[in-house]
Length: 178
Image (cartoon, rainbow, N blue to C red):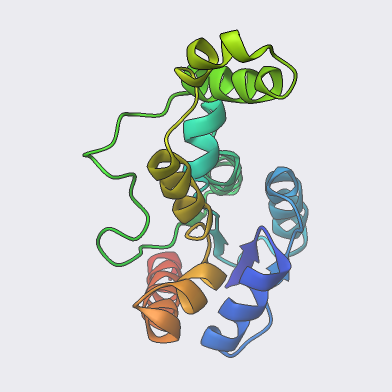
């Protein structure tokens, strides 16, 4: 199988787990282009695209580029897109915290910038637009749980979790292509 990844660290982690060379595209936007180019050269090989799950960006901007581009690449080459599965609670925004949306995140960033120079009497009103420390911590936690390298190094599942997930995904793709 031809196996693609968004970044170098994920490619290195998954190459180690699979025991054969894989391809790093260095940017989510490159995944569809590289997948199509490799399919032209190796039309009979099944393609597996291991994407990042950028949940933190989805909260902040409304877009999950890792997931979108990996899915686009897989669709373009009739391949398989797969994303890391973390231990329960590791890559999820806590349900007990107020939801962060792109709008609330933009308001937070704007208020934070204005607070630096705003007169003291405006601080109370501006602080209402700031995200809580808990919300910011939850976003940071999501950022630390986006790809297979994070799965290997920041998850309770560790390298064994990576090996189980990537080997099973690639084996199934090969089996389905036969």
